[in-house]
Length: 137
Image (cartoon, rainbow, N blue to C red; front, side, top):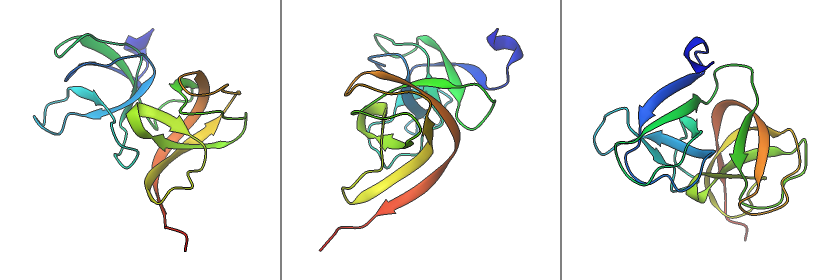
């Protein structure tokens, strides 16, 4: 199924991917097309990885964010209600509108409810858009 869908691609892990459905990006250390989990909410995400790995060099299937019309499953950083806009969160997860100062990426919206941290949520993702949340006085 993935071979005929341009939204999916096969890559290799740059390191451990602890769970499926985490946001990943291109490994910037090597410049190769290996993928790594997005550690910070401020890092631009390129993919949602469908697999988990024990280390570097393992083949993984990734969905390119912003391509295709299918929904994608992501890992939530907290409770999310259906229809809410979602943004990047640390450790490759997604969250509702952040209140802490920092840079985040708007990704799309939740198609269903997420119970809390580490639960999965189906999402509709578009091209990430930068959001800067400023500190409140």
